[in-house]
Length: 133
Image 1 (tube, one colour):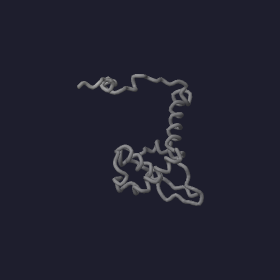
Image 2 (tube, rainbow, N blue to C red):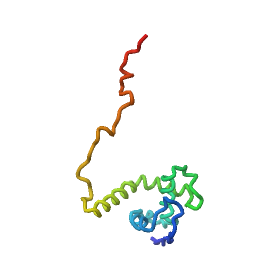
Image 3 (cartoon, helix red, strand yellow):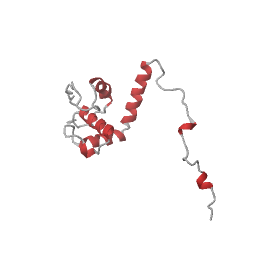
Image 4 (cartoon, rainbow, N blue to C red):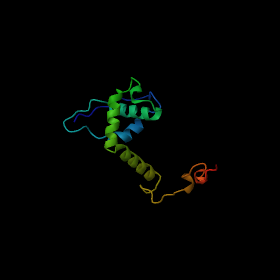
């Protein structure tokens, strides 16, 4: 496997671009290419494309031309979905943050608020009323 050197990004092009510190956290979590394959794309640029799309909500085909081709970015996004990479990244980052503030890596309690699940505005009364003729 050939290690690709990542270009130094002194200025992010878009607000959704990864900073150098963010990239250093995420880079080790990116799976290597399958056996016998050499990665020919810049994974930081792929992630920047994914985050741009998720942040702006634009269609995949509308990714700016200075990012990798939309189809390549989309294919990596789908692959990462299948590998559950996003969940693993979220879990790893949550564990790091909790450890940094002196808490256990996983929460030991949860709060469920009944007010956060609301019924319909009419609270069902309109449905229960008998139609008048």
